[in-house]
Amino acid sequence: MGIFQQLISDIGKLLSRYGGAYLNGILNTLLLALSATLIGCLIGFLCGILQTIPYQKNDPFLKRFFLKLIRAIIRIYVEVFRGTPMVLQAVFIYYGLPYFTNSAIRFTSVWAASLLVVSINTGAYMAESVRGGIISIDPGQTEGAKAIGMTHFQTMLHVILPQALRNIMPQIGNNYIINVKDTSVMFIISFTEFFAVHRAAVGATYLYFPSATVEMIGYLCMTLLASFLLRLMEKKMDGKSSYELINQDQLVMTAGTYNYPAGQNVERR
Image (cartoon, rainbow, N blue to C red; front, top):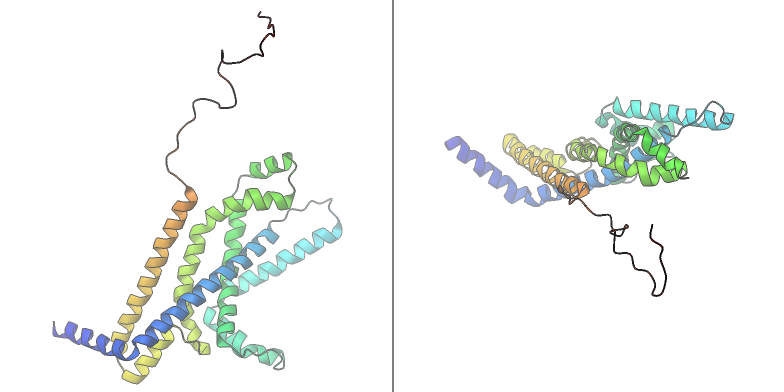
């Protein structure tokens, strides 16, 4: 019991001294994770749609060439950013770009660099999720849309993407939760997020485990809240779970209820 009381006491000391810094770190983490997830989803949707544009052997050569080139570029982008740690991507983009551009490109804002790193990393994962969500839709949906005269753009916008969005909604939420935790590596480029506050507090007080406890509880609260909101959103998109069957077609009048103009003779057979 004495150890537990000591832990509570140390946590109280940390919160009294660094409570505002912890809160600011949480806000920075949430803002970065949310912004990067939204931008990453846009990147993922763009890449996923470009990868699923159909072409035939009898299409013009330039169309087939550019579609294959775009797909090759997207594949390289996806494999590079899915196959390397985010912390190294942050180092490469923030510290490495000046080497390759002769200092022509240098980030003056750590926030902008962090947003770029997390966004393009999220986009790489979302690109495959969107591609999988699109190809998972029954081909009959596309054939039916084309049969009524819809273009490929109209088919994707009004038929395929709404269904694909519902299918990949859990993955979007999962990527957001991952980003909440993975933004902790942005301390490598001096971005002041939640984990960076922990490192600063530990360096000043040497209360490593109490500060780590605060971090664990903080990250757990953020992810649990995100999971709860995601489930509410999924239920909202699913609509009502019970439906009332319509037993009568409202467009067809019941027999014997047709009215004829006065004075009109109707021949009955």
